[in-house]
Image 1 (tube, rainbow, N blue to C red):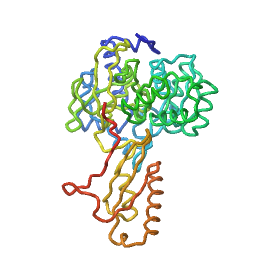
Image 2 (cartoon, rainbow, N blue to C red; image 1 turned 90 degrees about the vertical axis):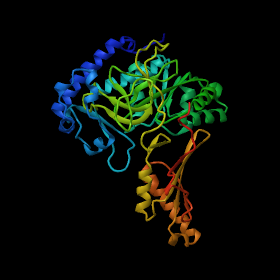
Image 3 (spheres, rainbow, N blue to C red; image 1 turned 90 degrees about the horizontal axis):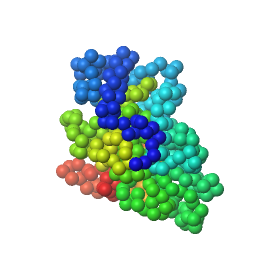
Length: 435
């Protein structure tokens, strides 16, 4: 048995959880039907009205929402409360075109921060801890979420944001940080930097909460060894609130979903059929307790498995595995969402044919991305200095589109192997979805 931030909720009976979810769903459906024309139209198209929804057993009757809906309804089309009730937005790093913007009332922020506080307590956090938050702040949800959770818990919070490793290590040693929150790759980089500087014995960390990108069990063990901590996983997405939708407990065998605020389903990504617990499929969330921006049956594109087996920590919330892959072609590189289509857009805008290959790798726990692009026969005859200038131009354009640095290599025409006429677009050498 562990400590809990909200014991009566985190250890509630399955019947009680079902009751909360059923009531929440009925209220939420009524609310969006009455206040959100976009939802009402979707429900009418699906031939469903709020009268058809009596509880959790009717969830499957409701239509799915996808990121395309969010883009189409951007910016205000899915809001269920007047703008005057909203106190904040957060936004994703976004794909091409319109970003995803999520709105929050003060109550939405309180609930989100409570979820993050639960994650901190599950990792052994108390008000006596010094919580070092090295997720990015700003529109990205990582920093603000864990920052708020740490405040709720009453811990001393260091709002470090990401980067400036020297300063991170200085505060970590001087203020004796005990819990670090950041991406796993940054944790690995910090560990390396601390050990290089011979400061390992000056570090007081006991736990880390790492999310926003996929990481393997091997990477977990490496970080745990290098920093002398226990490393916990956390999961979330801006559309549903941010980090803290689910979190790992001391058992470290999957993440408990905060089921008093979110309903999780796993579906067959091709047919939309709901799958039983224990089967692998696409994760779908309903954020029924959200006021400003509730989403019903939102398809995350993350592939995972749900399990309701009894957990030694005493929490009764369903557990999800780490994402085991994606049902779309999104890559997460250095915590940033990257779609091949974004890269293709840049190439086409610069006069290249869509013959390219994206190679993602991870060396020493740091991600790299290389884009190989076939030149047109005219370009191929250019002198080397011209080709180098073209590569530089693409590097800048990709940085502007993706927000991260990619190596660009222009290769000779027809040199990218095509299998069955199609080029293999993405080679991900990181093996992230093993173990």
